[in-house]
Length: 219
Image (cartoon, rainbow, N blue to C red):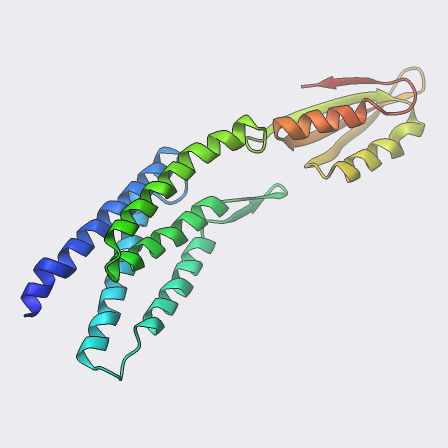
C-alpha cells in the first residue's frame, strides 16, 4: 500500500515540484540573482515533501495530527530564507523580488503536496511570465533600472538652500557630494544620484526652476 502511494501519488508530486521550482529558479539564475535553480528547486520540493508528510501523519493518526501546523511552519521557515536575500545598500533595498519568488515557490510546492497539480503548473507559468515581462514594463516606464548620475550645478551661494530643498522635496536618492568655490562669486555643487529615467527627468525639471543665473551639467 505504501509502495503504491509512493509510486503513483508521492513520486509524481515530488517530480513536479522539482520541475516547477527549477523553472522559477532558472529565470532568477538567468538574471544573476542571489538564489538560483538549485535553491528554488529545493524550496519547492521541500515544501511539497513537508506537506505530504503532514497529510500522511493525519491519515495515520486520524484526529491526532493537524497538517495545517506543518503548513504554518513552512511559511515561517521560508520567510527566514527570503529575508536572507534582501539587501539594504546605498539608500535602497535589493532582493525583494527574489524573496517574494522564494515565498511563491514554497506556495507552489505546498499546492503540489495537497494535489492541486494543474493549479501549481499554471501558477508557476504565471510567476515566470510576471518576472520576465513585468520587469521589462517597469524598466520601459522608467520605474526600474537606476543608474548613477552626477549633477554639477554652478550658481550663486544664496541659491544653495533652494538646491537642498529641491532634493528633499523630490525624494530622490541624491546626496551633495561636494561644494566648491569658483570665480565670479559662484559655487559649484556636485550631486551624486542613483535614479531611474523618470526620477532623473523630475529632478532635472525641478533644478531648472532654481532662482537666479545657474548652469547644470549631467554626467
